[in-house]
Length: 244
Image 1 (spheres, rainbow, N blue to C red):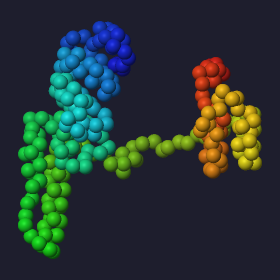
Image 2 (image 1 turned 90 degrees about the vertical axis):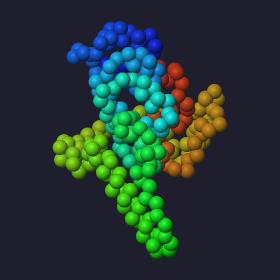
Image 3 (image 1 turned 135 degrees about the vertical axis):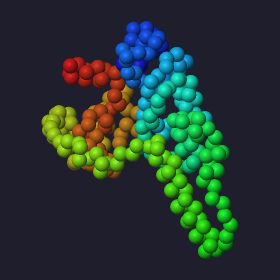
Image 4 (image 1 turned 45 degrees about the vertical axis):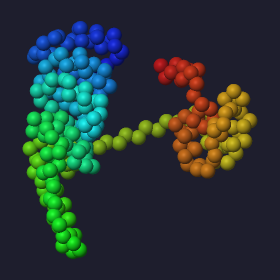
């Protein structure tokens, strides 16, 4: 069930498809962070068996509103999906681990104390000590994360994926696009634009400097209005009619 829409639409979704008691027939709910924050109080009325959070690194700030609202929702099992599990500092990593297992990773100060390898020295001895500290920190991080992290490397799954297929479909240019392209190539587009653009559509910034011909040609391939006029509602309306 895609849980989205305005307040009334979401209330209707809950009434029709989300019974008060979570059971075998309860649907899998797919929603956005924004919807979860808006309705955290209502979603907290359900006992969720599994909650999967995509882009889990968004929970790295322990004081962010999203994290506060998600903590209100009862969850039996939690899973974070992220491409960057190791954050820039220990506080951000602790925030993720605290969300997953708040009973184990309850104290930020205690978590950081696990990585306190204080030592004194000077010169080469201090440099060697610092290097040893870095090795110890990395080793300890790996040991802590191992039970909670399932890592999938590209080389692990690449052989399981079908070979990439590229299908190139050529679309002919419209007469208007051909005309603009000719002017661009001949470096006369600036004059063409001045002569043909309606005064209403002329505004500062519409005339693009022709300092990069390839970029302008690419824009023309996308849509000629990217060069000689701003999109307006009438243009979008007529384009939609043509597509339909």
